[in-house]
Length: 211
Image 1 (cartoon, rainbow, N blue to C red):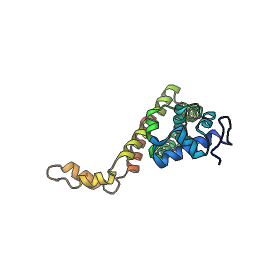
Image 2 (cartoon, one colour):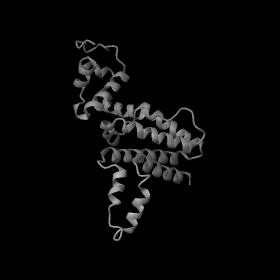
Image 3 (cartoon, rainbow, N blue to C red):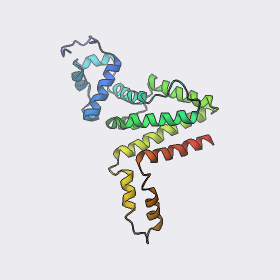
Image 4 (cartoon, rainbow, N blue to C red):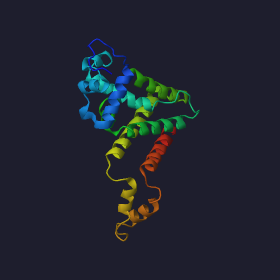
């Protein structure tokens, strides 16, 4: 693709092309390298061309959050169980965020209320309303679930010690001084893991929503 595009040329790009290239750049090199100039170079256009698709750098960052959340979009067809739908959405959101660890700080710091994100939220809220949740309670459920997933992912992505290693360290404690920790570590050794702990907490949260 030619790098000599003029300011007004659209260069055959779409907004999706721009956001996809931005996310790929962040995945490869981190958020610090992302700029309109660098992104333009990646796409083979002048930086000013990108303003046809994103109004400014903030809009670009909001678009990246949109890209991440879109990968975990709620299914268009309900399973018939709101519990299953919430569990599937939580896992899809976790997987999408862990697939792009360099972009996770954006999800934490930016609300990114774009039209596409609002459509995703609308779909989850519709599932909950159809299950009998008052809308305001459904919104609490949605925010609580999303906050839980993001918090777990941040911890998991930043942690230098795997959950299984945490348990292994506990198994080395003095059983005479710390008998409960020692026994708990011995019993947990076969099931410790980030995914199993995520499932445990998620199931407890959904059970709480049911009540």
